[in-house]
Length: 452
Image (tube, rainbow, N blue to C red; front, side, top):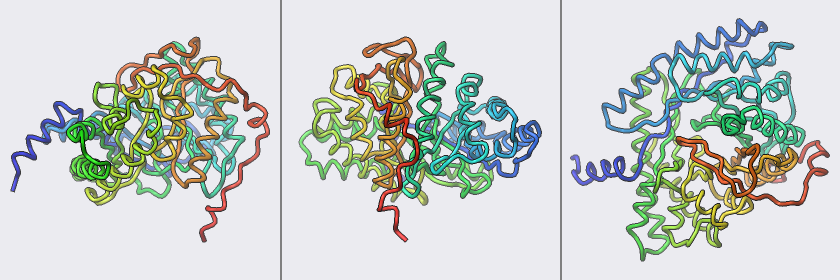
């Protein structure tokens, strides 16, 4: 029987608490598009994406109208393009980025991910060419996103790739200085990257995935915050139980949308990623959830404990609500996209070092953090290495999406607009890690990787 209170509660979630489906992402394998001639390969890529995703956006819009559920982004992820670049020796791999952009524009999707490379144990043919093309490729495109996996628990950390990515991120920011250095915001550097992540900029279609698949990413920090706000005197275990129940409701909505899209497009349904993904909208903030629990400001002592409770409760509630939970699934802490995080940085409560510590207990890592434009590439690389070490040792996914704000200094603001918000330039340690980064080589995998 339909419960009227449940219907009214859901309507309130949409209208007042910023509940939405953050993304319906179609994953497409491009392995059958591998071709020595890059121009023919690009045509195959365009044709295959159009064949499967031609009605992707329309289907999402139809589902929005049918169920009254906002779907903020319709996206595509593809096989890491470095796999295709390996066969086109000597060609300008930026042509792949332009082919992806063309397909994204024709299908109408918001973003397309997979201009990516997996180099956690070393560079194979095509990897370095693709990585070195990133500043040009991301400056020449609006919708193409990139990720590079530089480490894993099983392989250790490729420090040569870490050092290279420090340089690439700085150069990507410089190449897009007239667009808020946004090229750097479209690069994610991973340790333990997952193959079914629907969220940008880190999404790519893994080699273990079906030829094509639908993955859904839900959201709802505002809903969780509203639920916790109604419990001013509750114990922490009571709060955890409420978050579990709320996450269940949010994830059920994602399951519904994913199933509907799968049926309409005749494409297999993959996973629901139940990550709490904040926006700059007032109230739609992970930081504010932590503050509702009793922290005066996100970043103060107790922040990691509160975030651990939140992340665990979200997972426990969501996993019971879907036939297949995957992706990253937890709580995101992107600075520029979270109104509470922005305020915490501005008042000095939240530092980059605290963010690093928080990533040990939540999804992903340092996300949409802005640093001064004159930050040395070796410092960017050292931040990546620290995050990768957290992921490697704890056998979890960690990542860095960091934006050097060219021409800006600590305390100034870099404006992105839209879902990306604005980022305060965060202070960094004045001490150098240059010699450490320049050693290169590989940080060996930890003992806990030997599980066989």
